Length: 290
Ligand code: SIN
Image (cartoon, rainbow, N blue to C red; front, side, top):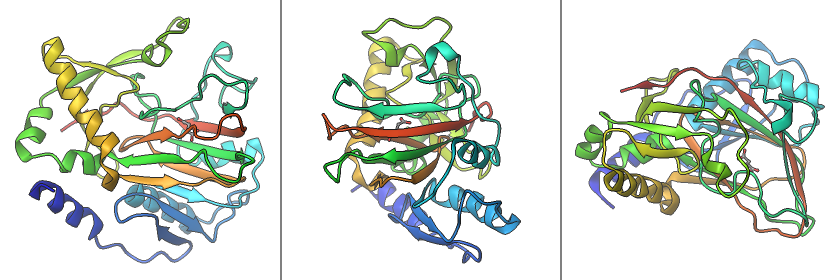
């Protein structure tokens, strides 16, 4: 592995973390993901629990809460503790609640949501801060339907300083129509230019902000150059397991991830079995470049 990558892993994995007092936080890998226990999300949280959940999200980027019994209203109320929920037009959703995205796969499915590396909502002018997916049904075969997450701070920091500097001067177009290729595209989908390297609004840490789900091209480069560079960046995320954690779901698991510094990929390895979940998405702010 290159020295810049080893240095980045050592820095991230070796960060000093204060102990938690109102939750238990067990890391899934040294660089991304944690299981949180000792909290019931259906009940009002104490100030210290909420503060520690916020801190755990910034430190781990993906939080897994198991054995939660949540109504839709309790799920949404937990999400609202972190911001306003994104509402979608009723004609674009499965169901009748604009704030609730239904994630459903079964024997009739010909595709499933999120079955490729992406970050939720990056085509929006103010992309989502985070998403909370509550899975109620997992495949009857007893396994399958995991979700992979990737740490985009580390993805950037693994690159050479020269490449990081070059990327820092670029912007890219994120196009809401990209996931609809081959299907009838709904009207009014957003398309926005964002910096390729962004600063996390809460930690100030830089991260790589392009994803194959929505990023169509880099504005300052010729078409072929843009495609080659994006392919290199997309491949890094797809082929580098050091960046990843893998969440194995059980019914009543809620996962909260930070869209400002992660990508994710739902694995559809359980056809024709069923999986069902509900997701809320929290509105964020306009990404700032480095
Ligand atoms: C998504 O992309 O939000 C869906 C993730 C999943 O189904 O695991």
